Image 1 (tube, protein in one colour):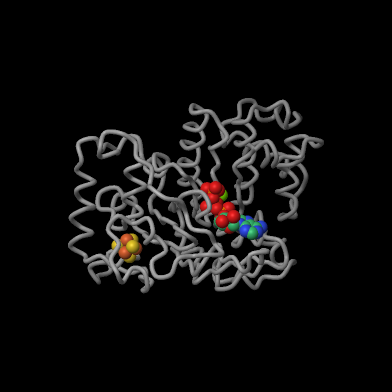
Image 2 (cartoon, protein in one colour):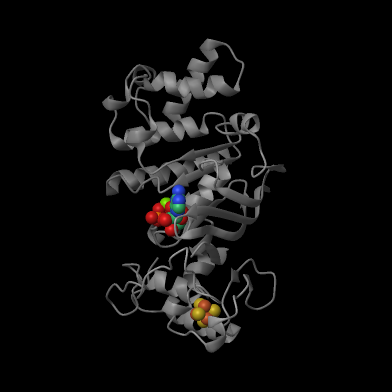
Length: 338
Ligand SMILES: Nc1ncnc2c1ncn2[C@@H]1O[C@H](COP(=O)(O)OP(=O)(O)OP(=O)(O)O)[C@@H](O)[C@H]1O
Ligand code: SF4
Ligand SMILES: [Mg+2]
């Protein structure tokens, strides 16, 4: 079931160099109980997409399009709507758990406050719920830990608290922006296992933003690949790994340690485009190894390569046969493993 339907989202900053469109006509849906991975290089617009949905960007930044959360448009929501929705219907966890908790309040107070804000229930019940949530995210002795302050928790534990707060009111949508990047590898893995478990338990729709395709393979059901403020490929996760169609996705897969087809890690040559001087046509053309003449002038639309309705969309002018041949070549390379 679709809980968030994003249509033609467009976010524009005014900068000294002119208008910078960081998110340019992005459309996708989030489904109950499924995890969508949003991937792409630094600066591709992943965080701006999530901040636009949460309406956490400064006033004066233009956000257009629609983002229907259970039918209610987040783009036109006023402050009162947003106070009601945030933390209740839609919640977000950020990269750095050290800055997201208030150091002067106990962890318990902060989790309880999140519950109190959206529920008129007796104190004892709020306390109980907070304790249950800490338990649910794997914090040992949750009753005792409620009285501790954030500095008494490790980074991984603080991220668990953030997840507990985000899920405290059972939101329809959880957005996690690089939730494991600041953590050590072992803790990262534990948080991913936790998210996967919670997805099943709470049945929220999750959007997981990450640089890491390994993380995508671990936990995501669907993937959207962003480049230069646009989604260039979108598909179920197995399709992305087994028959990727967009040359940018090929580059991302090639730069993944366990998949590098040449046996060594290759980064995608060139740099992401400047938002105030975006190339015409396909935005990837200056870096694309198989660019054609028309790629310089015609912007490819996001659509199914075969024309069918297989849930696999890409924005590239190559012929369907070329996409298939190269994509499958990547998937069957000896170093590829999943
Ligand atoms: N307040 C702002 N004013 C102007 N430009 C901004 C602002 N915030 C972000 N941008 C620009 O928007 C683009 C997209 O940024 P965003 O933070 O969404 O990237 P990202 O995909 O999340 O990257 P990363 O992987 O590094 O987190 C970048 O070019 C960034 O410089
Ligand atoms: S449209 Fe052209 S430049 Fe863009 S990814 Fe496809 S082949 Fe490359
Ligand atoms: Mg980001």
